[in-house]
Image (cartoon, rainbow, N blue to C red; front, side):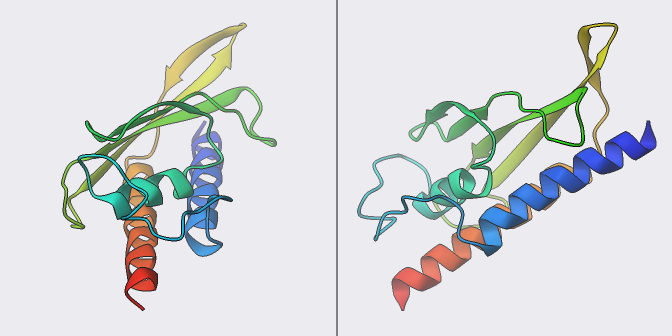
Length: 142
């Protein structure tokens, strides 16, 4: 069980960092601020979408600052799935301006059941989003 959790954390972290390091989304706007129409920080919003772009997007509310992702299973971790919800809490680019909740389920006897996830996973995703947001902001200022 502990090994399964470690695999899930590794997979989630790898996908989160891939969006951060390699640029994330495919159709990035030239200006994050000009193309954004919402009530939350545009850099945190774009960075959240970029960082978690491997998860299927379920709903996104730029005024309320909530992005819901749907369940996804990854190769090598069949029988378990994850989903996430991102809360953008501020209109400023601040370290406490984003919160990520990650959920995990495992399949037992043909049914999906909630399973524990390392609390550090959400923090790692928050840090990846913040890093990506800073990159977006600095690239626009350059």
